Amino acid sequence: MSTSNSSPSTPAGTHAIVFGGSIAGLMSAGMLSRHFERVTLVERDRFPDGPQPRKGVPQALHIHGLLTRGMDILAGILPGIREELEAAGGEFLDVVDTVASFGAGSWRPRFPSGVKAASMSRLLLEWVIRQRLQALANVRILDGREAVGFQTSADRTRVTGLQVQAPGGGQEETLEAGLVVDASGRGSRMPQWLEALGYPRVEETRIHVDVGYATRLYRKPRGFEPGWRSMALAPELPRERRLGIVQDIEDHRWLVTLGGWLGEFPATADEAVFLEFARGLPQPHLYEAIKNAEPLGPVHLYRFPHHQRRHYERMSRFPEGLAVVGDAFCSFNPIYGQGMSTGAMQAEALGESLRQGVHGAADRYRRRAGEILAGPWALATAGDLAFPEVEGKRPPGFGLMTWYGNRFQQLAGYDEEALRTFARVQHMIDSPAAMFSPRMVLKVLTVQPGKAAQTPGPRPLAASSTRAA
Image (cartoon, rainbow, N blue to C red; front, side, top):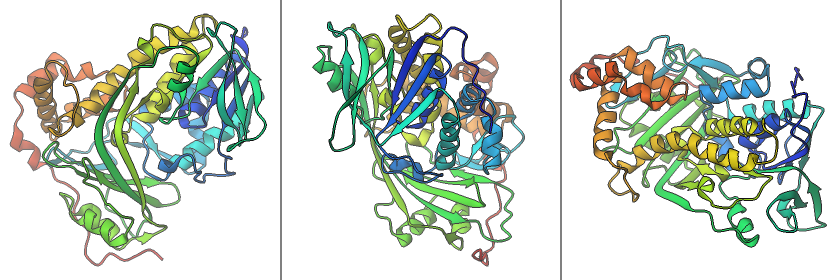
């Protein structure tokens, strides 16, 4: 296992703490190991010795997507991680060529796009990253400890450490540090802790979408060769609300997720309900793929009530020595797959903010993080705000942008350049501005709506498909 860790010759400080062992927390710890002599990662759960689920991350059993930009950042933090993920069974597949994708009422063309993304379970991803951190000489993992508050300077303008204890009570311990990073997720108690220190309540934006989904693990049927590695059946928003995804993961298995918006998702973990929901998708291919596949476990349910963005970047006062990353800062509708990658971008920004030292890094970071989150937030919420039932402030020009977005999706149903552009924007390689280049605007204005329907999709499976042994 590679253990390279090109730390700067002049560290920004002696000790940094990250509390929360999320993907964003793991990446932040890896980044901070380059800037501090020592890093401690504090996690309430006991980490399993392998790619196994844990109580604090119930969503880990569902499909996750580490976008191309997020993977590039991770590989920069932990060189060699791609090869280690592949050695553990993960793959990096072309997101256009290997995915049978149905969206905007038609099948998308398939061709080598040059955009590759991780195809593996979150459990495997988290396990391999954690192994790499454990191999770093200056990183200590302290699991089975819960963060319960801060230690601060006398005037409360600087956080100087973290108070921890065993979950549920016990002797408190104070860990001193030059920087403390909150990666504890959307349930973070940071707003309350800051108020207790005399800081104003952080402004928060919520957009209620009532998203839910059900996921089940399957073994691929013997002899199954449909010509695709993964499948995505997306609804025409806002007319339709249901989606289905098959993700090819390690050990010849599928993760299959069925869900939707505004209550349109499997309500129970019942096999018959799961299959009937799959049967009701706009195309039959997913249902036919799984109806005779071998289940490898029960159906798992997950609910996501609302987008949640805490605007730490707008606070007029904020303590030195403190940063917030991942879902603790901004939690997106998981259907759009942006969470882990925006967490990676925040970890990268945290490293950039430390180049000038710890002093002022907290303010530099939170303002930069606010800028980073603006684009993904606009993209994710735009789709959800298209539902008339979803309450939230529509930005100026929202109707025009929705019209343009719908036309662009129609164009991507038959135009390879448009689909490649969309894939690069979706995976955060290019900014959304790429969709508004003069060439793209001309194509969108002259789109041929019926042409996309001519793109052939994968053939449905024969009804005689059999379960794997």
